[in-house]
Image (cartoon, rainbow, N blue to C red; front, side, top):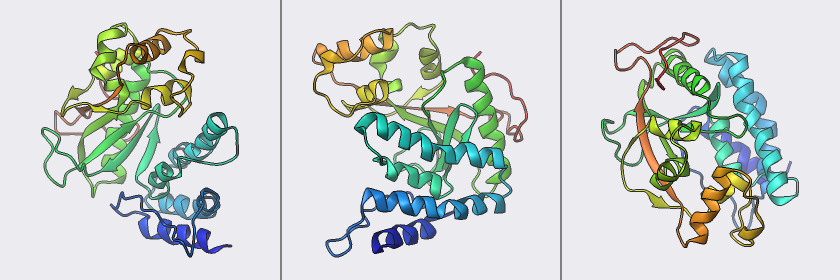
Length: 271
């Protein structure tokens, strides 16, 4: 085991269960840390994170669904770069530190926001909603996932109470809401959130998540088979830039003061 792998393993061990969400550069001129070092260390560390999950009583099914993001991101890396690797290893830090969980269709990152969110006090824990590849945005699937999240974190992270979730995504760009079919699942998902803050330019996000390419060149060669693909590319063709939008919502059960327990059905938030 090389020094780069050892350095990443020490980093993962120190972060496990902590509230530290930083992603420092671990390499130095004397001890470079490569993408392959991250991959090797994460594979070696998998038993540790699974044991930590088990120690909190987290169901195996949730652990397995959550850690499947490792293989999912390796597959995406192959499609994006046509090689073995993982260019999103910093994102996977969240999974290996016990901070993010997949509950049904969506992933939830428990964190304390760095920026002010209306209705969220300083130091308050919230859930950051992330959308893993695979599956759509069906109303029932989204509602079920939000209900699961409310109950899951109340049961397994009672020391970090949450009542609010936020989402930072190009799917919340106001331009998309104005141009996509209002009856589409994407539009209904975006409508769940109360916007806050000013959208921020992130020109490549829409292209990457729609087409799985990090290049902004040769966009004319990308497919325009779906309404979403056309919207993404036509805005760029017209000289526009896609933005990251910000929104928050109250988790199911929180308005009444009692979150649903893990596995308990909650009223649809999409009605």
